[in-house]
Image (cartoon, rainbow, N blue to C red; front, side, top):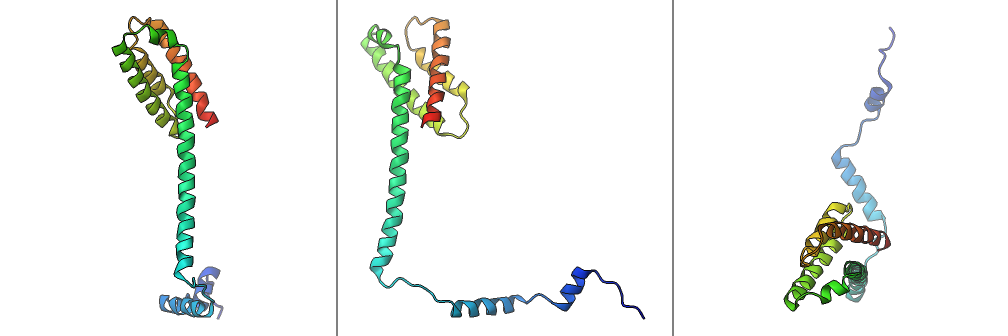
Length: 160
């Protein structure tokens, strides 16, 4: 009588059944017993390794903060560019408000540049709101300046 035709994958499973979880655990335990385990000899070595890990984290954090600070300074320069005469012509109260709002705008733009996807419209909107503080500003000047400054700010994203 001919043998039944069995799928080769099924035949292999029948002939070589998978080990149970108990058998797998025993095998792993045996391997662990046989493998040499390197342990730290002293508490000092453990502390040294912890300190190295902390130090590398601190260095990376400082580098990120430094690059963000540089980017913020570059944004501030771009926003202030060409507005010296306008600022001098403002009243002291308006100057203070303009300066405060400019610093807030710089921080918000810096945060937006930190995102993976930068939305140009948000940056233009922030700059436009800031420039509206200028008394008697021309609407067309406002649009043009905000777009020019936003373009320059986007270029910073590629540099930092």
